[in-house]
Image (cartoon, rainbow, N blue to C red; front, side):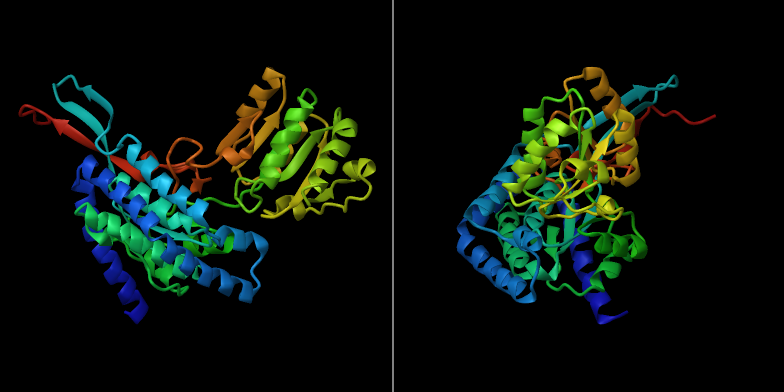
Length: 419
């Protein structure tokens, strides 16, 4: 066994042991730990922001993109948002022990299906330090332990956040190892975690295609993932164009580095001549670069041509592809061909068309007259999220508390034996 694998194994074993304690803890104890963690984050603000400053300085020295730096940055308000998310999770109903189904067989045996924690959840992520606390909070509330491996660009910040969360755990009488952050970012830690069958119960990668591919290819334990967030908005012929403009500006410009940000705008040919000049002007005011299909360039001749690769790219910045389509069928075909099954929207006043779009688009989240930016655990009322799954098994879309549970069957009899 290599030294790194041994270190990862020892940390995971301690986290697994602590996960069992958390699974058996009362709802009140877990809630108290979350509230104490939120308070510790506020008390430790100066230390956390100082650690974040070190990571930001290193990011600038390495020449990281503006999108990557924005994902990394913490300030007073972002840290307060993280603390509030902890408190919001504490207020949510506890899924552990929830009965999802029960029935009695003809022989009198009573069968109950009940939610239980998954166990030890490994989460591998990049850039966003808020994931450290969001993941810890959701895993704790749902009775799980977690072992976290963040990116090297946020190591100082993540360590500071994890230390504050550990204070909350200890103050509630729970083992600090229930939330374990790997104190190193070696690439070999990813396959090491994925090899720990019988210790790690599931792995959730959050990051770019390279990270997700590395986890999927090396893991020997189950993986829940999301592929690229290539999100679309389709402006239908019967759209309210002022509404469409507001939705597009929000979906593209509010936080372009997010996976739920708009990447391709589809505009119905019936409204393109009127709408495209208006939306192009509004996007230009927000320094957004347009990349356009040939039909769009006939209306917006200064826009550079969009390539085939552009329509398959998650830009994660102020770049927007635009394509004119002949109607709903062409819009659906384009989304199904180029999308990543993450989040896609239609803007229309025609209910029948909207219902057809909602039915035909096979994405985790499908919107009618709303921004794709709502694909987020907090916005869905989950308090936070450990990721957005574009898989189809176990979890899909924002993953909150229920997605971090599995179930077991409890069977009660009166001495029945099988014939």
